[in-house]
Image (tube, rainbow, N blue to C red):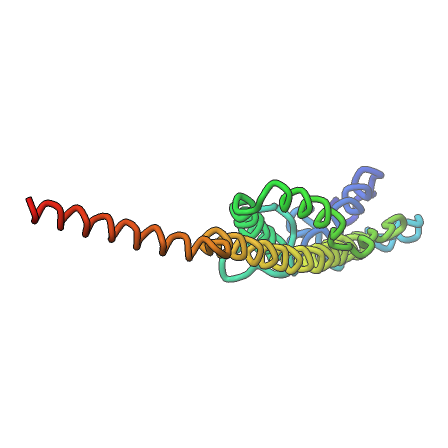
Length: 215
């Protein structure tokens, strides 16, 4: 692909495949082309009806080390917001499973039936933009735009689930606390019976001690 040389179909195909996938300077270095040679190849391809550009789309998203998705938000812990929310949700649901042990079987049955009807709603998922006919820059941008939209969708949905789970936990905690109070409060009449029992025990003890003293 030197000056004065006839360009082959393979030469042009390679330019079409790589153009826009890296900065232009790197592309020219890889293909060993001057600026004029690369510009000539691009013009030739466009005359052939190929939508080609040397414009490079600089990625703005980073890969989350946990889920492997491209994300716009990596927090101070180094993970994306959806992963952080999933972890928070798992912690709340674990706490709920612990609290469930404090419910009666009847209460658990009611809880499972009513809570199953309170599923968090989800907005329609974003749809990827069709990439047919787009050049490399447009495809790269469309791909990142879709990833960013999916991240926002997942964040919104998971925040709803976290909020709903937190409310469930609070409802169960309240019911468990009520059960605990009932277990520690004696039914009406038992307090007097217990007091009578203690008095009788004290009278009996005094009688025995008096009897021993007379002997």
